[in-house]
Length: 146
Image 1 (cartoon, rainbow, N blue to C red):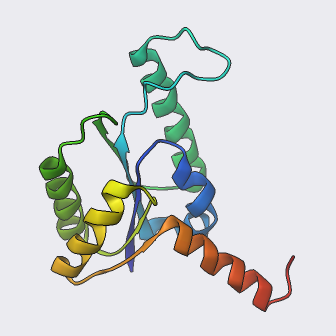
Image 2: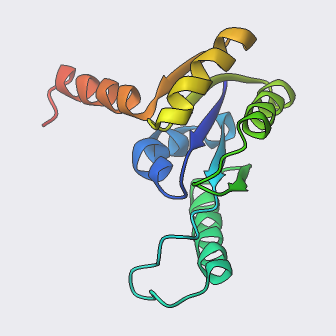
């Protein structure tokens, strides 16, 4: 089953989903919504926006290669002015063309409103990062891990 991981920003999907991706990388694609270049990089606060974007892109490419992901793409939308129609069409096309059967998405307002509607329309499953994470914790408790 092919799964789309939909992250609002560059790095959050790694924390929530990388362990599952590592188990079966061919089953996952990652779509990042925002280009995330307004936030400074900790050790380099004076980098320009394009340099920040390129650094984050490089980081994600390295993570993708390490996890053996075949597809990671960034829609490069600005956090302050998301084009909802463009976002909807991009997600729907990715689902239809990519044969996606499930979406795991970041728990942010815009995605919480949009993704369940898209999934209902396309008759696929969805779960947000928080629910996904909670399920992982329950699974660990059931098998006796701390």
